[in-house]
Length: 362
Image 1 (tube, one colour):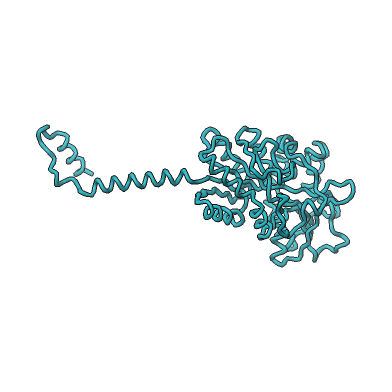
Image 2 (cartoon, helix red, strand yellow; image 1 turned 135 degrees about the vertical axis):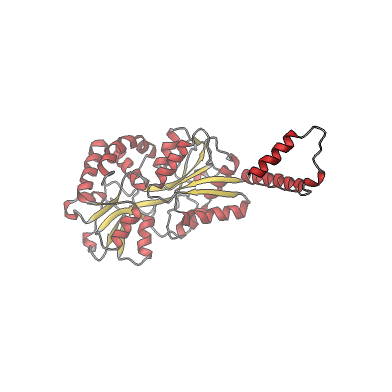
């Protein structure tokens, strides 16, 4: 460094008439500068031909569709995956933090509650895909700010070694039945589909009944970090049954665990089984709006839902044009719970204020 400083000083103090010898100037310098400019231009054009996606659905299920989209269109997908148990909350927090300078183009959420939180915060750009009418109205925004597809059902997974068929639970209310005390399980209801389910119950039952249910649930059941852990606990015989999602339930079935899936509340006058969609939303002011719309159109194709249905996560198609076989029961084959997801989102603050101190430290 000292030698460099001396050289710089000599140059600065040299008489104006003193010329720097030409031989010191590398003949490669113009070529290197030109190469740098080309690299900069390539990166710039490459970034224009991409879509940035924040993804809550597990990477193993979502990434193959990004690769297929890239091959078909030539548009690069830059995904941001979050693998934490509260991944949906983490991605939502990132999007809220980036509100003034969005980095994300498309949010692929694995549930709907936090998508609606973003909608209420004004972060979502309305867009109506060409095939929007192929999806039931309750699973899409009326103004196009979000689009549901590839749903999962909230089910009871039962260990068949521990429970005889005649004694299978049939309702989510069995989770608070004293006869199952310490033998049933649920995921922490502060994020993911369990939080969505909680918000739906607050909207459906009202605050008082919902608070009573969750208070009893804490006393009666065993809480796990997430739905997958609930399913694994059932499969391993740690608990007799638990509330989880169909994709995690199917994982235990595919692993050969002694389990059976029960679609709850199918009786006359009962709630019905809750189906929760994945959701797609374009971020308002996103860097690549055209590519974002192109990706949303692609992911809402019947072929994508059919592939998700055939895969290990056994997602449930919502597009009425999908004719491929499915591995689990659908809203067409089971009594589905009628639900207004926007009303559920409106009740989330009340639910969170009650549930957070109740379950956060457990």
